[in-house]
Length: 126
Image 1: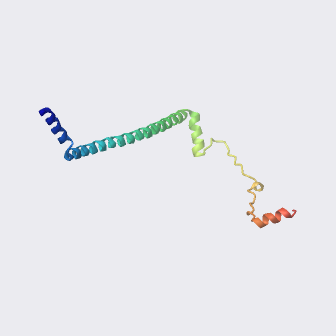
Image 2: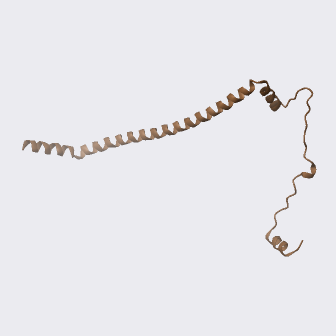
Image 3: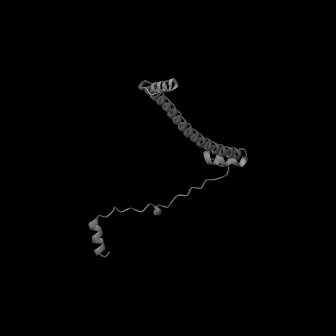
């Protein structure tokens, strides 16, 4: 019987309110730690995805810069950039400027008609 009484005594101690409160407090802190780790994991995954996007953008930017530097390594590429950016021409070349004729200007826009004007136009012949 002493074993039975000893088991009963241990069970009574483990099920006492003090031990249950201590276990609840321990469970709270463990759950809070797990939650904090979960939040940090989510933040790191989102940061990883944004870093991958930035890397892809930078790689495409690098490719365009490599292409443009290769263009500048040739004489025709340098000439194109000088003509495009500085609007310069070789000696003896002339510039042609095409001007729109004044007859092709934007047509005048009439103000919108109200409801009564639309009805009047419907019944009258013009």
